[in-house]
Image (cartoon, rainbow, N blue to C red; front, side):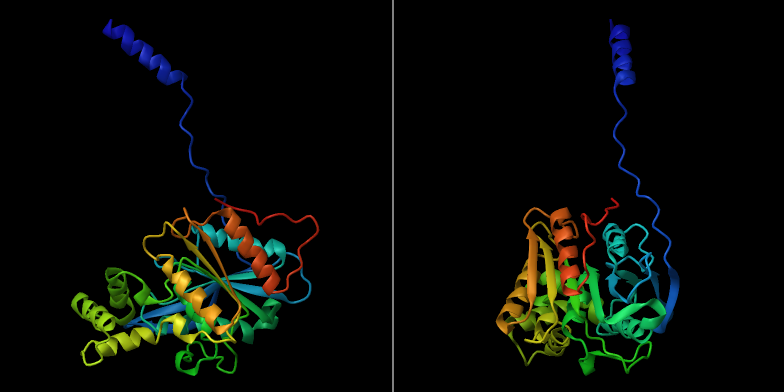
Length: 323
């Protein structure tokens, strides 16, 4: 009897269809220009080259808008396994040039922001070399890249946060449109633990020092030795730089994001509203960190096309996806 049961189970196993395998992403298309050198920096004593990969539209015509893609922490400008990067690179089919950019590994601020500004100035200075329109430059940043995108969106040409990384200081770092996805926009809008963990990275503080900064801020204890740290964080909080003239921004958040909680989009959007600046806010209640679904992603592409004045081709559908 036992042998019969085993034999029957074996036959069922052989007859059952093979478990569905996740689709394999096709190879990333080769960049039009690879490893473009932008700057050489010192990252806490270690040399690092800031480079970019650039994808250009197949059709050579009038100068095109440029989208700079800013990866999340732990990624790189090579973006081989980055799903959102693949989608953004696909915008070349709609007439955009796309560059994937980088920033220092240490996470120090505002140096990390200055790294990204170096790219904006570089591509403006070399616009003719890439056939891009220096008056139509946008960004799409996710997670840590979303933090940087939020700062870039509102600190163009703020001298105290400009730096001279990569040179081209005669060029503006002002952006024309910014997609800010799953970001941190106000460090103190997050839980104490999340805020403190970012201070370790941004300022290089110890756990105890970071906890003290949070406590001083919550109590508004300006007499605390930790208050200087709170002021340093406030100096790199995007919400503190929004004005009525801030360039258009699109905020994207997910209700299920337990790290960079949706409050980050709420506070930045509210500040845009208060200042009378141009912003939109897209959210999916059930979405997760950098997982906001095709409806929002397609809408973000349409928003970029509108803000950067890109004409849709007749019969063009949603941007091609590579899962």
